[in-house]
Image 1 (tube, helix red, strand yellow):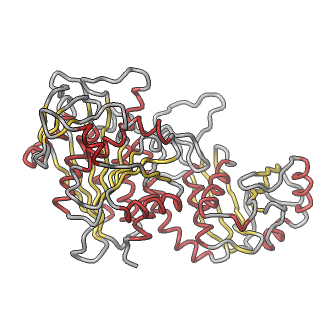
Image 2: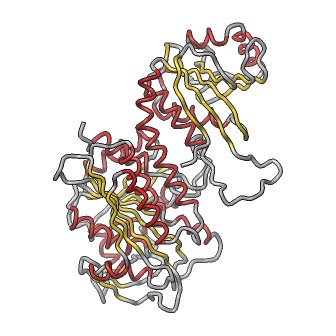
Length: 499
């Protein structure tokens, strides 16, 4: 995996190289090691702050070129605001802000990881390092030329000066695995659909074998034998055959029930016979953001050797309007035996998830299942792009996911489920319809999925607004966000991993 930024940890008193980054509070006060590193340049900072109306607010940055009295080519002061109000995600953003100051080409950077009270904790320094790498991510592998003013390749060697370099390095070995998982998820979502189709997606997921993940790939014949008529119906109009990939990481106690994660992997979604409008259809290459997250998460768990048994399952299809494509009015039989009337072929993701959820529930008997899917435009209307929609049949799981969202910054918001919504997807010809119409569209989609979890504790995350095309942030400048990897890794680490 290529990486634009190489991060290392050095003792707090180490000499600065290249760009020097330090932190101050909202009174422009710095820590003792920072004051020593600045020396006579401290007065320069005060003058520049006054001239630039820099108040040390959280995330504000003061950039001084060729600072007099320092060997550093640039001095950047990042404000922390009131230090008593700082939270973990603030340090992640500080890393992103630091990365934003790097320009194309090769560079060296030293970050003095210190607050006014002294050295940052190893955890805080590691968050800065993670933010650096996440912000520096760029997907431009298909560009052969750069336009005037367009940033080229970035290569940076960053040293974080910390109180305990050994502890920080050890902690970052684990956190770095999670960052790698996010980058994998972003890469998958950003890839063009002519490159990343179901067979290729399955091949890339299979690379996790190198980390000790057990991989099983179900082809069309195997899925037919299992009775996965809902998933196969979606892909039957494509020249690219569908696949289901089951990933298993056995890091917990032998025989202990696993935690399970299921991802929607529609590698391209035209809408099928119920074809989408042409405008922005190119974005439907990202309709596999849930599956991308699951692959990134399984990488993170395996790479950091998480002490948990985990299953990741992804259903991979293309939804195309071929002469063999399923039609509105068709009735398909799912692996569960329940029949589904197809009302709209563009409500396809729930059909894919229906069979994979049932497979996971029956074959692995997990402690819980969380599925992720870019499922409905309705969730974007309801929540925008800052929260994923969460639906659950289990209050404890929902509460834990909500807490993990706050900690990771990948937030979720719970919406209701209830039998009154089931009436909207009842069919007069089959056991259910695949859509209940416009009203409560995200809820009826979740009600549909709930019919395939077989009573397993379960949560559904509708990530249509957060996985792709969301506004750029301090830690992501890419079209694909990799949403969900950090959220679910935090859920596992906090509540399900054997300590």
